[in-house]
Image 1 (cartoon, one colour):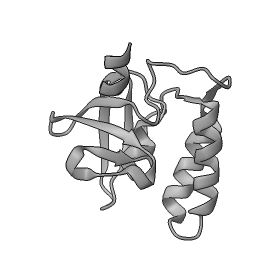
Image 2 (cartoon, rainbow, N blue to C red):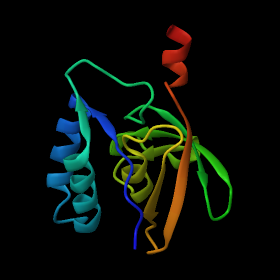
Image 3 (cartoon, helix red, strand yellow):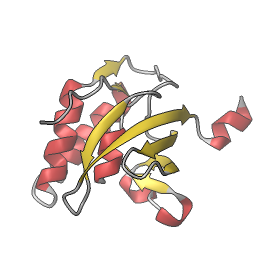
Length: 136
């Protein structure tokens, strides 16, 4: 039995773009597209122009812990075309990207890796990207 999924929050802009991406990926990546669509369907959507710095969104820097290994990882959640694993820029169209989308610090979620393993991760911190932090 999987644990109840935590509440997630996404911006209206991200929700619209991700809905289009999920629809476009339905034939090439059906499982991932279905998972993303499920997450979008249950998300609380912020009004246009509003962003919650407390919730992981496209561009957020996220620190999370893999509960099975206790390993902490920091990554930036990005659009598929901006992904660069060497710079820890992870596409929202990956299993971990879908799992992290909309999550707040202190929340945990079970997610299925590409190899089919189910892992539990806990978001430790959600930060604005370094560029935005420097500008504020």
